[in-house]
Length: 78
Image (tube, rainbow, N blue to C red; front, side, top):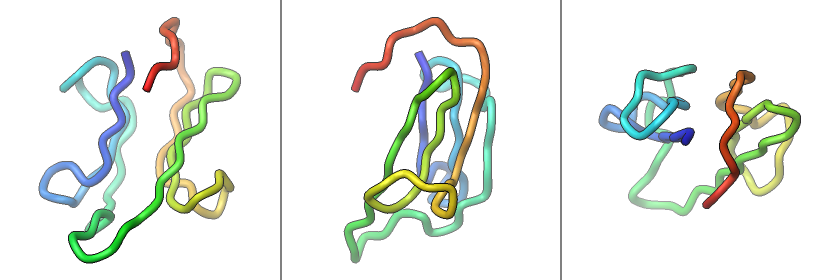
């Protein structure tokens, strides 16, 4: 299982980890990525073994937040 966290560590970091509460495979600083005052859209893409996470309604390189390419033999579930 892959876990995607947005706004972890008191809304300061986002990451992708292997397993629930696992060590981050990739982690980035994302201060105030989540808001109590407004709705924000995010997208997740999994294609060819590459997992991407971004903001907005549609996947594109300009809105990319996280990307991880690695070996994972699980199934995509929501």
